[in-house]
Image (cartoon, rainbow, N blue to C red; front, top):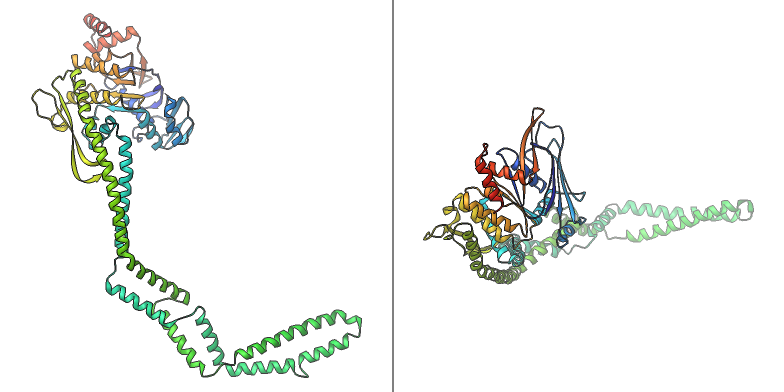
Amino acid sequence: MIKNLRIKNYALLKEVNIDFEKGFTVISGETGSGKSIMLDALSLLLGKRVDRISKKSNKKTVIEAVFCIDKSKKKFFIEHDLDFQKNTIVRREISLEGRSRAFINDTPVLINVLLDFSYNFIEVYAQNQSIFVKENNAQFALLDQLALSNSLLLEYQKEYYTYNQLKLELKAIQSNGVMSDSEIEFLRYQLDEIDRCDIQVGEKHELEKNISILENIEAINEVVSYSKENLNNENGIVSQLSNLRRKLSDFDNFNEINDRIDSVVIELNDISSDFNLFSNDVKLNANDLNKFSNRLDIINSLLQKHKVNSLDELFEYKQFIDNKINISKSFEKDIKNMNIKISNQFKIVEDLVTLLNEKRNESIPNVTKMIERCLSQLGMPYARFNILLQKCDSFHQNGNTNVSFCFSANKGGALLELSKVASGGELSRLMLAIKFISSKYSNLDTLIFDEIDSGVSGEIASLMGEMMKKMGESTQVLAISHLPQIASKGERHLKVIKTVVNSETISDIITLNNNERVKEIAKLLSGKKITEAAFDNARALLHQ
């Protein structure tokens, strides 16, 4: 429940601090005094989009409320990684530019967290929200709340989501895997052509090296012969350095130089060995040049044909072709397997929606009976209400049925959809009846009515006030009302007043004591000129 609401610098509300208690609280005030502004500020605190900030002010807006939270509702705090406190503080700050920051127990939160908080703890019903009972999703939500089928609905929605995902996967397989016979044949031709060439890894490089050798074989052999002659013959470099080393070895002074010559001789011997190996490598048949060149031409032709620059890219392309052919081969099998999955998931969804419909249909007679009983208590003894579920051709988020709320206010009247039969006053009473019943099934701590008494007066208003007072026994109820019959039923009475201070109009909210309540209710009864009869009637209403 709300324990305290503080509003600073929002429209006409410059500095307002309101304490609330359990039970039924009435809020009244003249038209334009700021009652709706107070609710608007509370809606902002609970996540509403910012659209009304005073441009005349040079101070930021701060809206803060203290909520008394039961430990049974810790789940919300755990889900959003927030510290749980019995007296939870929710604050929203809005800058002059319209940028806002939100906090729960001093932890910054996103606006969607405020909306989730609102969903779990408080509901505001405004006079222009009668569409609630006419809108399809809202009707399903109410029915599932009263039928205690919300958990079953969530399970159905989870499986329905899986069912839709499987259908999307099937569509993706169909769009990616379909190839004509001619396309498959062409891919097979390309694959066979590459396979027939039997190209080996590194083959192109080896061919290019051998061709280069064969094209320059005479010059290469001449270089090799020259190196052998100058390195290893009797008067070659190695022989001369060996002789020098022997002569130097007689003198210790040349030990270091001798070691260095030793290293050079070892290196030259290695070079000589490499020349010998190379000499063996270049012993290629000159007739092989045409064979190597033709093979290289075949490989280059394949690279050019498939628009790749290297053998690695050609092998990747070959793998790509192979995969496409394999996918095509398994396409029908994949489609068949996916259709089996979809069929099995359809059965799961169908079984769940059957249970959901059964639970809903079982509850409808009891729900309609409770609503009709409440309507009778609100001065509509002949009112009839019914909920119709009609099966549709496909699944949707709420099942596989359409829902209609049907209503008749008068004896003998036909049951028709709400939008076609209910007047403003009738709809207000129906809405109150629904809220009265649903409040017993919901976990909401606070319920706020903004002029739900629209279109009613007299005895009916008194009956509505009694019902709101009854709701206040289990749920904190706040009601904005202009009707004295409802105002007199409140356990507390707040009044929104508007004054002019330093040429500026501001609103404030005060708690009325007993004498002030009598005066306020008398004013609601007779207008600005309060008669003694109005005072007597006000006292009588308060003591009923």
